[in-house]
Length: 512
Image (cartoon, rainbow, N blue to C red; front, top):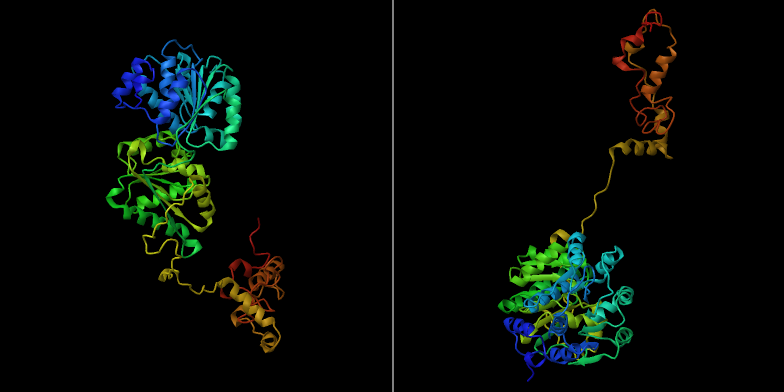
């Protein structure tokens, strides 16, 4: 059996490996390290969790042990699709290079440019970056890539598949043509492999397992779920998730729960916390410091459930994950291999459970076609049997349909009464037949000096008080033909509250 001591690695690197507790390389490490040490391009394909990161970090450290980097000119470059994976690669370099004097810099989003600029200015042997932040530094004139001797693309299929192709092509155009290139991934679709041929020159292809295979020590299962009603699917699906977690009991020491959408990540995490489960979300929209704290807490065992988008599906190494729950069937079949690869790592046993709703059955077929086997169906922990449609749930008392109260407006009631007065029939004749009422006797009495004909100003006020003579919108709203409310109780003049100044003659009124 091959040992690390047989791979011609730097003695200081071997010492760090032994201190980390490793003695025997994995198949991908045993196959990829020798050609990488020879300076050849490498295309490595292996199951996730088999040690691909060490497959390129160990030969890189050995090759870079001699020499010194110049300011702003890194000697090697590692590209990663996510911040978390880039940070994990940086941790691997720290572990294996602690006896070798090598410098590194980590360029990822969500971190201050100032700190990263300071590290680059000192000169770095290993530059680990996500494509976007790397190009940001280059465009700002802070980075020169003419001295890159080794270039690594980790999770190559995802880097080249999901929108990274233009950035990757541009970065490859910035590094020397004579560089050594290493590609590593768990999956490599044929069309993606054709693209890699553009960047690799006569590579050593190391494929230690059939592409897209899943580890044999991971127990898989899928629950075919159908909600009682479409509008209750999300709520009932979260209830099924909690039931699946409870059914695992003490065997579920910790778990990663994958969702397709960031919104669902937040919703599921909030729901689990509401019901007493120790859970926290992690996805690309969160602040980098929060993502780091959450991931560190999960690794340390302080957090039991990590609800994640596919940002955590690629390359994250948390050795003791007992379960993976796919709350959604992944849209890309390859992501299923990466997701469930978070459990069953380093020879441990793991369990992967997936919930499939009717609209995801096509994606499930794609997954089964990729892994070339049927995923066993599970019984519904809430009582259903292997995809059986659950009975229609009876609406709760609070959900019973209630007759909507009639909406009325007191201000429109007089208008309705006026409308009734104007309709054909006896009601329409009532105002005409009603005898005209005269003003109270005390109001008809006039002062001796007041004219029989009211002054124009007084007559205008009388008209306004009785609703007559108003122009504009709603002038006669709610009034009968004579301006009174519904044709009754017509008021003439101002009644008993006539202001004194109106009773004065024009000569007696104060002058301005």
